[in-house]
Image (cartoon, rainbow over all chains, first blue to last red; front, side, top):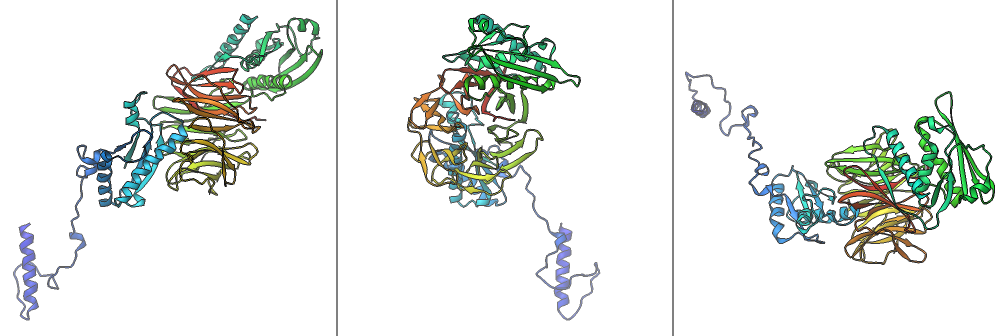
Length: 172
Length: 425
């Protein structure tokens, strides 16, 4: 590294010196540089940073983005205050990462008909989508869909299970 | 006499189960209710059927018994359709009619199946039918005889030769299956690790439309049952579901959320020509085309909770049709346009109802509390629907007057989303 630095310094100084009318001969390698500073871009010398998956906050199992579900009250299709953090965190990530896309899958508990529940689940997904759009996420990054009552997270005919199933999931 | 009937039924089913061999997913049909005035009919064993792959008379007896409309009397054996008939003897044994027939193996491996129907009260032959069928179509030949008897004795076309489709779920595996209306001959049309809902038969019985979640969102497919070719009919942004065929088979009505909320659209069977047909700010879904092609019935929550409406098939004003209770969904309209079947939530229970559209009179048809997805038989006499029994989902059949009841169960897993196929040639 230091060799390169001093070499560059040498070239720079040679360039500066050669800009003055008296050329100075150096014992080192021939000077290739033609113009003084600033240095033009050299594509082959560029180093771009790669973040491994482990660095992407989306993949941190302990990070806030690991929470991807928004839950809803019975017969309700509005995002509750307690769930707003999930919406905000993912909205922030998506605005920073405009090539990322999500599917927002709305769900219902298992009471009621399959098709009507599909439409109710859609309302939940849409509520999350609207909230994220209001926070600046682009239309093209989100698709709100419904799984109705077909993919419950919890089994059981009780409020505990039903509450876990009334949700919208963010899927990357 | 009653004991003999039951014995014959079970024997018939047992024989059929053995003959079906390795079909793992058998549907078991159980009769739990019969009609009020049953027609007594004697069915004689068909000549030569003992050596054939299927005992046609047993299938005819089973069909007529399961209809709940007939009291089947064993007509013994030793008769064929050409035997002379002692009308007085049959009449005094309590039979209003007698069916007799024969089977004849042909040189090419198929069978000549003949039958005649005799009215003992009139003292005359009232119907005859001859068919030639290969071994694997002998059950169908028997169902056609039962259909003929049903028509001649009740004036209504029989539906014994029709098929049903439904979804089974066993753990993570979902299957769309097709079976004969009596539960036999199960065939698998689609296997998936993601849910399948809302299957709908094309009017000609060769294709089924359904919603598959295989791509993590609901998409409407049409599948040709014979060629296995699948077409995506609707995969717009958002959810795509609830397919219903127009009577001419060229168009499907569907529910799409593409414009932000679920509304009813029509689309050609190849997925082109999208048109929005319903217009509300809430949920419009579950479109159902009427048999005359003029109207579409659908579920809408525009009044606050889900109710059933009717609009012209081209869209426009919608007229509300259901008024009992605050939750009515899953409209199904009978082929004659006179009766609407639906699911109504009463005191938290989801129950099957039928509505006489002319009088506005509603009738509760089931005594269970978790009913879904009703489907009319093509002759309008019965409703096939999904319900829960013993912690598992099963299918049930009820006659439109509520009297005849059947249960259809599988050995394991859940069975749901039933749809009754059309009359076929």
